[in-house]
Image (cartoon, rainbow, N blue to C red):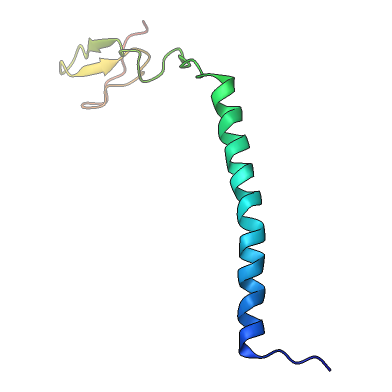
Length: 83
């Protein structure tokens, strides 16, 4: 039967670490180079997204600001006219 002393048990993980470290480094470099060669991605503009300013109107009952497309006033609950 094989028996390993404390020194042999320490050497095995150290050897594995130094064998796997260069492989992991190569993988990281390849991924970074692939991302760099793809170039920067252009920003996507979503219609009606956060960059678009909401069109505001006013409630005919209380005068609160309402967004375009709202059916009811958020403050007083009155049904808004169709726009």
